[in-house]
Image: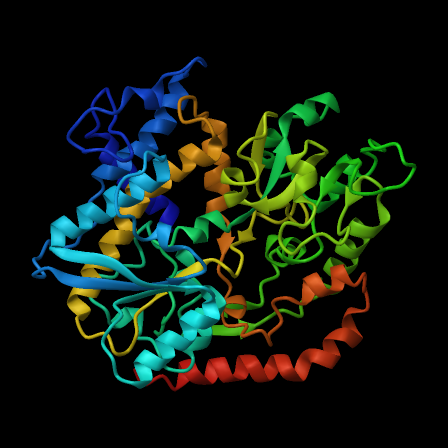
Length: 497
């Protein structure tokens, strides 16, 4: 398993680390910036080991031969204003920005290439049209696509992208690539879409459960990290813990968005995540085959459980007509919810000015018998692809592999620093909980290749509509769902490159 490989890589690296560790964004031959391990809060030996493990990444060999590509351009297409994840003109003084700039600079110098973002389209639809037009015209003007994963997959099944397995130097067994690229997004030896750490939004868009430690203590709740580690963080645990936590804060005698709740989640994308959290993916693997498996023996129970969760209990709040994605997260931001669903990126935006002590938790399990915690990254996260018209495949392979490797070494640790808001006092529990969340990410084949007609968004529809009639609702959609996935499977089984 990759987790074992990561541990082995870091163990080897740590044997080379001196008493003072290397900083996550600096020259790996110099001592660490002491600011990374000092502060008003005491650092334990275990905490220092957590720092070491992340900082030791810089010593891991990416296995790619250094070459000179003669100053060739490495042109990236992205969208939705995410250019800053891939290219910056200079350091800005912000931790993540500077790590991204240094990552790119190292790769440019090592391979003598010029990394540039030639288009940051306003929407993923605009990016799709640009890419499709370029491929149809036979124009070799794009080395790497980084865009909305579902839109990216739609382009893929229209034969716009190369198979990543045909590109040299790409090694999906490495820790800077998501396990899911090889496990879930590869079929019949084909993977036109991949998820790697260079696409940082796959981390920032990862769903988690935030909890307000200050409020939790006020309500005499246990240490939630212990609950998670004991395997007891389940949907039933959440219900029993939060269903009666309610306060009419605004005093108007009505349950509304001005009150305090135990648990808050919108009934749209946040609710949809439970499909994977409860280990009920759209597709599963049976040997070499990917099998459509959405309609399991427990899907009826999942639908009823979630509809009840978000409609029956006074302490569990959802959907006061708030905006898409943000939903009731503002309750948490304003200190009026103990738990709330969101994405890791919220910690850098909506939660940036919170003064309460907060923590990260995974989405809950279905029950204690479920072995692992799972989550997913919102479909707006970006995935990587190479247009069929791209010709300098040797350069693309080497540069892309190392961009992902350097992102894993430099950018992801920087992101952890900022996300945890404890650059000087990072505690091992917080690091471990983030690792647990990241290890549980699913990039489900059925979600990525949903194409807006598959089954991936049904659960949120049931919850939003308070509809527990799974069988008849599913029957009305089954023909369209099957048509979508049959087209996708046919593409993979008849892929000609």
